[in-house]
Length: 108
Image 1: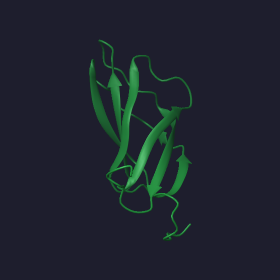
Image 2: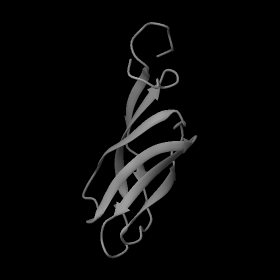
Image 3: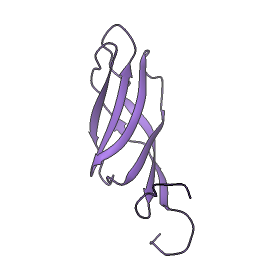
């Protein structure tokens, strides 16, 4: 869908992807941002992890996800246990919202 000046909000498109990711170890009682190559992702995309196909590792919580560099997904994992843990390896479901222009700074 191409950009227009028709008033309809600032979301150009929303799509869902399911990349297979291989996270690495997260130390005990900490958070870690890990990066994954994801062609097509842009720094203006809004990214949200909406699920994992299977069971997440006990004590690991998925936090923020975003794209700070084109084609690279950044995901934050929290390990709330007293020992190092590896987040689940496999297919994660992501929602990507591509904005039509810059995000507004207010809701009005």
